[in-house]
Length: 122
Image 1 (cartoon, helix red, strand yellow):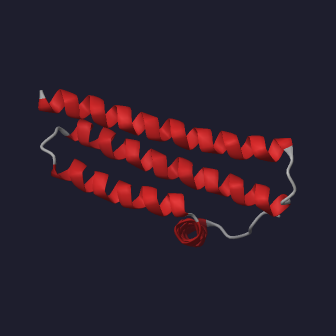
Image 2 (cartoon, rainbow, N blue to C red):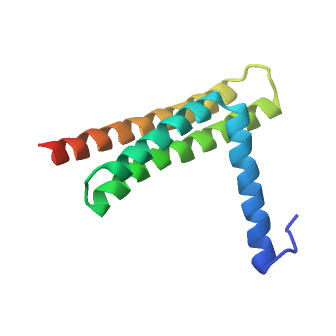
């Protein structure tokens, strides 16, 4: 059912729903909390480093991407768990693929940080 809310009110409501999602991820997902702490530290380091703006954006963006993918993975897991707790091959596959997406995002962030810091420090 489509909402009849439009304009600025819709934006305010959407922001509220987004905040609820971030809060739910923080309260219910240990991985999100761990990655969140790492992200805050990494972003602080990226802001502290004497690098050009593009490098800083790439460093921060790679970490933020991990957080985005983790939220999507948590949403997939919550939906699968809502559907049923019985084992089903497709449910397991969905959870595994969500986890794989998080792993790929983390690997991308690590490679980005290593590459850019290597370039900066040599």
